[in-house]
Length: 482
Image (cartoon, rainbow, N blue to C red; front, side, top):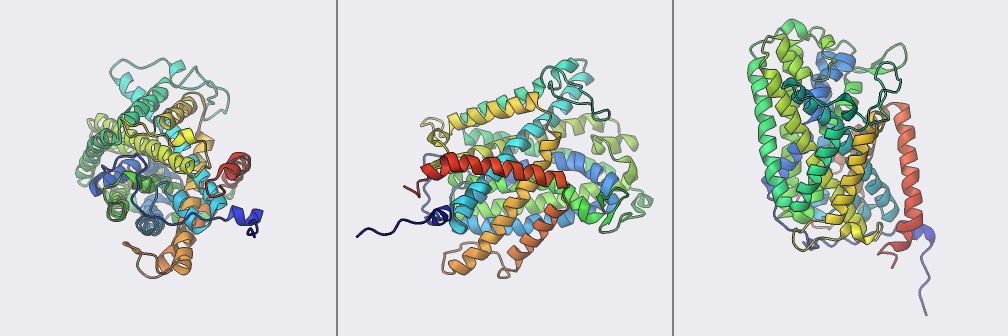
């Protein structure tokens, strides 16, 4: 007598069994704990430290932007501990997607995977636009600047007038994405080696800034320290203060979770992934606090709403030679951010394809390079087109909310698995019972609430598109369904 077929609702909640067997599915295990930590630093230190420090201080937090970085860093720390526990116990590639599959079931895992595609894909294209601006400025400084038509896409609008201000294509943005595509195809070991070199350059840049700025601090610039308090609102209802600033500078931390997508290529994932996650986040948080504190100490906070506040601050104190140095740090910093996020995107797609939720060619691994070449090429072409032709200002706001949603789900996943699978081996276990993951849910949820309403609306539209794709393909082709 055959057993009853599961209901439609039960099929949506079917969970992937936890089989942490060390299988890398053709990917090469070659990344050490140090490599993973450098991936984290490469993803984190970029736009945040070179741009958001000044913007958040000038428009939202004042000198208390230091506290904003602490609040955002604490929220990320709660999530990082949850990621580390699930990486060590549940394992499997796909980051939050894989963990959600084991904790919540297939449908919510798909939603989180769709979230991560948004986070990584849009972030790479958006950062490529910023990279292109700095790169063209560097070319212009030596008399080789590109024509304006080749530095912006046809849909670009003027930031002040809002009128059409487009060109033909943002050529540098397209080229850098395609160059990273070639690098990732060649192999993860080569990509990690280049990432380490570029991380060293940008850390050296930051060290020079700290060494110079510390001797030019004017304590009067830190008064008032909290001009907008912890949370207040302006005349049109825009949130201000330390907590609102935390929701802005949170973008500076995006990418540390990319470390957990490297589970299949880590030499000892149960030990190395937690080390890489936590060490990279702690190191970068300390760097952010130091830079934002000194930056608001050398320049009054109201003057920092500029595209390159670190270079601007050094110029204000008369250290003009530092502009070229900071430009070098920005270019290499943004390159590593794109490299790691691009890598993470391809590995999430590999995981979803293995589970049948996406077509099989996304998980094909080349026997020679041990990389998913088809997947990498498709992602590269799509992101290059986005970077070259589409203005991504509005889409970039979606990156924060998608990432925060993934963090909330990972923290909830720890809580659920602590209750449903108390005997699950946990080589790394977040301390304090369920207190830390609960704090992660509360803090990341609060940061979501501080984001603009239109960001929530666009996020819902993105999720609806994902639901349609799952209904048309993923649900029917799921390996668990078969």
